[in-house]
Length: 218
Image (cartoon, rainbow, N blue to C red; front, side, top):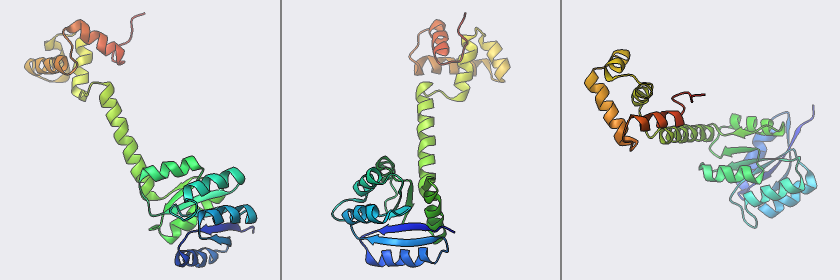
């Protein structure tokens, strides 16, 4: 069985020793080198050609981000797995732009770290679970904000009323279809006109067409 060759780059000796003990206990992983700063990480990577470099972000001489970028330029086949205490998406995106294939937090479990090393050695992208959760949550929030912006911040009920008004239905017809009172429908219509800064039904029709609520006439 061919073992995964790993180089550990971190300026803390105790952490490097701990990572060596953890990873070398795995039958499929071999530590081929260590580096205590970014410049040494680049030199040792080019010399030893590991499959995976475990890279800390905050290192002397050259930062982990710059070291990652230079390693990927000199040895594109080498995968870089960031191991850091920084959870913010700012560092994550910078690491990806530098060429990293994975992003792990130093508070990760041993099992997660070992899985990350194996995944990145296969060319896969691996994210620490909490980082992935944060990015997904941020994406969903942005998507909802963009949806609200594109629809003028209308509620689902207001969009329903808007569509029916634009189709030419009367307040009574809309009320019957949506199981509302005519006065409630009128309130929704008034709110729509105010929110969208529209003056009449013709403006509502045009707005509904622009936002895909009505099919454009052929």
